[in-house]
Length: 97
Image 1 (cartoon, rainbow, N blue to C red):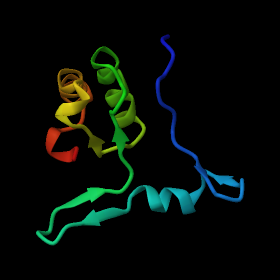
Image 2: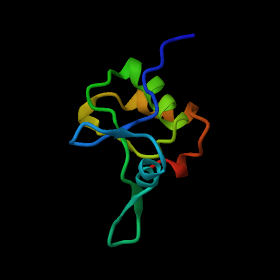
Image 3: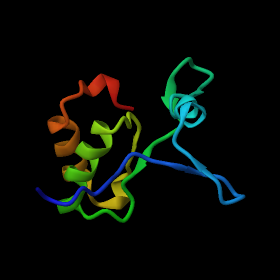
Image 4: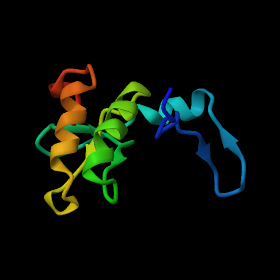
């Protein structure tokens, strides 16, 4: 089995403590709300510095562990891989922001 690129996130506080319990999971589902009513998850996968040939797997694994917000930009030069990951992740495109 290939090595996973991502694991379920664990919150680390500035005081060195970490938690993976309910308090962290509650923050996992928080949303930003825009003035036009659009909402996006606060937790997101940044695809900056992930090469085009590796980003599809990263996106699929992120969606598998719960991410629904994928940050990308033309300047990252990995749009093909991001698109492939979103198409192949098993979650409907309208559910990924």
